[in-house]
Image (tube, rainbow, N blue to C red; front, side):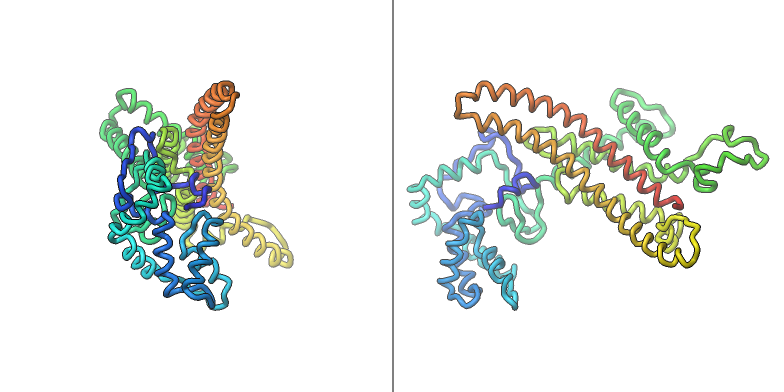
Length: 423
């Protein structure tokens, strides 16, 4: 079985109430193969075939299987290949079981599952496993894997490209965002004003991000020529700078990227408030991907402004130092600044992840209070408090969904602006 910690991460199934998607399999061969992989009988059959070719150390195949059976219950019932990898990792010459061989063994064992309907079916009925497995799988809609990916269990991929729940949610999020803004773009094409509640609502967010986040963070075109402090000092005979309207050509070129980031994060966060869906921004793969996108935007924008070499040289702040001191201090500061460039984008990902997961964990803890007290006399006192607390935290998460999208976008704009300007 999978490590319990995996249950707060992505998964390869959607979970709904058990009554909405009941399971009523009548024999082992009807169960999904990803579930049969977790059954001790199937795992034993796989272990015997794997150990015949890949025994552990100096042990025989039979000894390796027996050692695995003693080890597995203490390690979440992990299969033989996990045991083999862990034991062999201590050997000087580390050998792995090839993925192709593991796959061929699984196909041999699970290619035709009719053999399970004999003694195994009787064993399942005797120990009540058929009803137990049906109950456990009820409410779980397992995602088909159209690209040939193999699942180890419902929370871990084994090989190939596997489609997870959050991947599908992200596709839905992208479709929603594209649909909404394609409609908005069409309605205001040619300079027409936005009409309707939805169009005005979306336009309000767009203007807010552009005028209050991106433009102030990146600066006007004048800032790239004169700097922030001195472009009001001299009017060059053309009137005062206060009389000239600011232009934001460079900032506006970056705005669509940050618009996309903001609405993608916001919509993902809002999906997390829908029961049984979950928020993709609660996984590091998603927040890390967003941070990489911002880093690449910073890198490309800075390289366009300063040149590929000039961008990296510009990481060093301007310092008026004597050459004898500068030759020592400047290289060290440059290394620190470059390391900081990578660190601050990594922190961007971790920060969003931590804030989203924290809210989910608090909700889980509060609801867990009611579950823990379900069989006790204090249930009717704990349950209402837990429900009220969960409702309040849920409302707070609605606010956090908007706040975290805004903060991520603001920090992204600041990082991009810093990359485009001289230090």
